[in-house]
Length: 423
Image 1 (cartoon, one colour):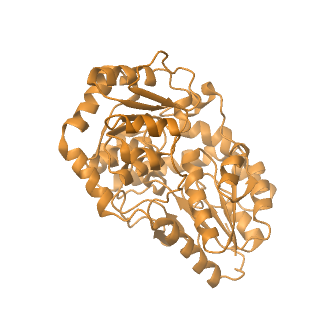
Image 2 (image 1 turned 180 degrees about the vertical axis):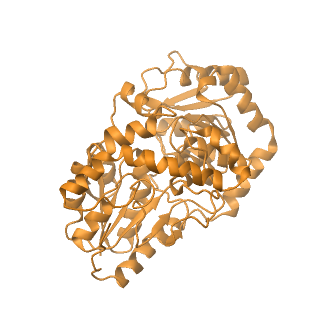
Image 3 (image 1 turned 135 degrees about the vertical axis):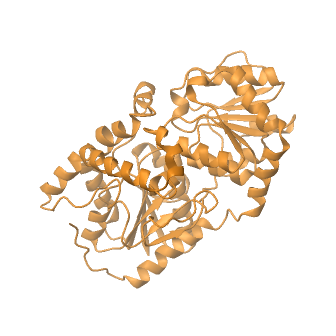
């Protein structure tokens, strides 16, 4: 069969789709990945066919910071990028699925159902983090409204009420989406942020139960597969030499987006490890604010594969993106998490609940505070023991196979599916 895997976002969104695409190819299927134009090299390097998918997340540091505002970021990204570009997204995705047998999409691809219906094929949405399930019985830490989370103790009614407000607000953000549906001669349909993003053919829950267990208000047709990992091979020769020359370092990374606009983090990181007498690896992306004249105990790289690096780290300081969280859990190393926006505050809370991480707010980034948090996770053997326990006690290698097998079974049941009428 021919399967299209599509995503909008960062490498944290792309890599899970590449993991599924590589698995599908290994099973003898044709795999296509539709993603932002700047990811064409990443996809082709994986040996997978690439198709362009707009919109692309802005790359200018000032724009990135604007869209990663803790409280306003989701509205800005959805209203000004995702829904503003819905026509281009629909056109690109329609072209990508022509002749395909199935479609799997990540977050933010709100016309996936329309595209799949037009081609007469089944589709699945892949959910990477618990925040995307928006459960009232296991409520997440909402980046725009973190003050709601402590009220979870009062029962599900608090977040059910909050989600009513969220649905109203979400429909306002999605005005361009509803306008596009009218242009196609379709009724408004359900709320894309809360409801119609989940496929009637099934939702692929790509995080494990120990991070977020199934809830009664999850969509009825789901398969919880766990974390999918895209294996990228080994590290650079320089990093390999550095790791072999001394004790396990602390790794500092802000992911593939946040690293580009946070000016203070890496300076404070270097000062923190100097206080602690530790070695460090800084993964800086395109950040221009990297400290100069670094000691030999600090290694700097724009990018290195976390799957190879983190098993040899003592601890990781990161922003809490779900991809990095997954890699720390697989490697069995504790974390200090500095969340910025979107799912990151909730991921930080969930790793804290597991006893494998401490959090530090962005506004409190300083050498002293980073050193204090690192002392907490490095000085308490229980953090490392719990991290190793999760790593050794959970099978982290099955998720991609489960997800692709689900798609295979769905295609077999729906050789050519009847049209699903919306509205």
